[in-house]
Amino acid sequence: MKVINQLKMEFPSLPENVAFARVAVASFASQLDFTIHDIEEIKVAVSEAVANAIVHGYGNSRGGLIRVCLKLTDEALEIQVEDHGKGIEDVKKALEPTYSTDPERMGLGFVFMQAFMDYLHVDSAPGKGTRVTMVKNVPRGAAAAASEKH
Amino acid sequence: MNVNMKKTIEVEFKEGTLIARLEGELDLRVADLLRKELEKAIGRYPLRHLVLNLGRVTYMDSSCLGVILGRYKRLAQQGIGISLVGLQPQVRKVCELSGLLRIMAEYGSEEEAVAKAG
Image (cartoon, rainbow over all chains, first blue to last red; front, side, top):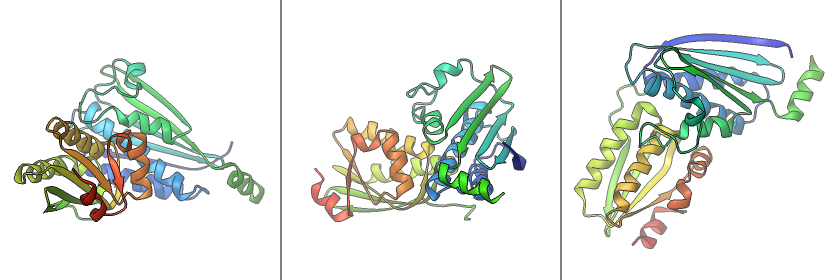
């Protein structure tokens, strides 16, 4: 799989940046033949990962840094969202559908990331921060058409 | 984009039903504001039912879904239900996936939601 484009961006842990991140990623993703439906799902997944970094990683403090790395191949978009916050003690438990440390957040963040992306992996350790890796595959027909063009 | 967002809702009280019309992109940035505004509106009227009109909501994720679910839990204790109107495709998808559509009725219009309330 050939990497055709890459992007790295870093921004402070401000709630305002959740919208920025999802719009930037959606715009980058539109280089591939994703459907509007796929782009909407990517936007939610990115928002959830960035919101988790702000709320859980940095405990809503505005001084943290969040890095988003994107890699585009002709078949998929890989998204990494990384923070240097407090980390997750039990990743397996955090990925359970009803788990949340905040009663109003319902633990839906990872549910959406899992449902909307084709691959999700969470690397985290207490005090070491969290790195979420997600992949969205280009719909099959579109990927085949794109590779014929190259 | 409106950086100094002042409001996310507009309300109307009709026949015991509070209609709250939400708008914009409902994410982490507006979650606290939305919670405060909904609480304020709920506290102001003697409502028997709450209708959330999401027709002008162009985006929603778990931050604001959590706010809606939080109000649902609190109002349910007083026997007050919530119904939804005007879900756009992205909003419907996250409402479905979060289970919100299993606990809240969805109607085609405010009028229908008000008529079916209570």
